[in-house]
Length: 456
Image 1: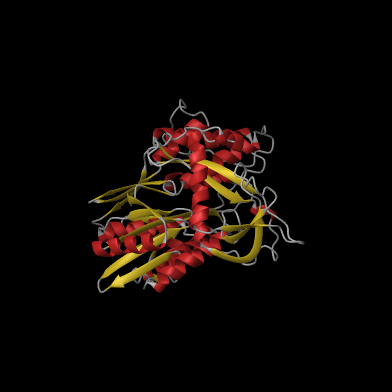
Image 2 (image 1 turned 60 degrees about the vertical axis):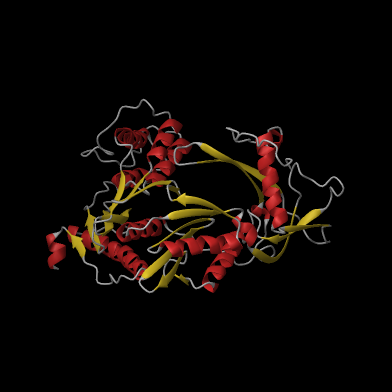
């Protein structure tokens, strides 16, 4: 470790690919030492001889540069992870399920915050998984580059939920949820990653996404109490007002909350070398159908899938590209030149409109509205229709869907009914999720633009 009073090394701008590269860089050595210090403080493991009949799991270092919403490197993070893919079910682990917040739940949280007019804050739990206990007998190798010279052949028996182990997320969630429930918080009935505490007319909300936590309250003292409570139990990093979460840029103002991903748009345009691409005014050509194109020339499937994956992530705040991306995603098995041109068209549109996002105004009412629509036999190959739908809380768009139907509808009315059924499912889930906030929208109206469907 560095001596007290020494100057900390500046953050390295490059992520090492090998341990040997990291060990040659003082900033990454410091990051690895910090990680191992957390292991010691949390009593993560015990050095011992490997018992007869037991097998050992390897460990590896993962190096990442942590960035802020502007893309500036703020920290070098070295994470020691277990090679969990070598674990055997029933021997090294049993139950592993842990709930994870949906992106719709995050948008719902922020929509409610904009309506109530309170600020949302963020905190990060340092080495969160290390707080969870495991009951299974698991042994791992000593970390590369930091082997004990006096006992090079010994292994570590893991006591806490080391990153990479199958049971680690579940162990951390159990630890955190048990702690919050013990201190008067109530877990959401639908969203198990949402925790609520009420004090008469005031409400405190906590949304958990693995080791990232966002929270806010209509009463500032409840926010302060929560921060103090968490910092007494866990080693936390308070990050102030929420500005960047799960790739979403969050701008909080007195008038409302704005969600965008323009930094990510810039990143993917650079990634695929589209910095000088010609902009387009729409994400898809209006009167040009896209089919299998069996006679067309094939393109690099890995490049195509990578582009689709990046665009799918962008739909978290860009419903305007949802249909085009989902359409292009149908051809990932054997993509052709025509499909690649369609994907490039989406990137051209992003070049034209990089900063669009979702606006959640404070002065909008808070009532749930659902919209449903469908084309008829839009796919020229199998004659299936495509369903579309969205849900608003006042003027706040919180969820949307676009999916090809699994049946061949024999009329436009039937296609609209199938689309409406999907919206009912999504709207019902949103309505049930909102119940915990104190609003009952179980009788939500679904708006459809097909006269035959309305009258029947």
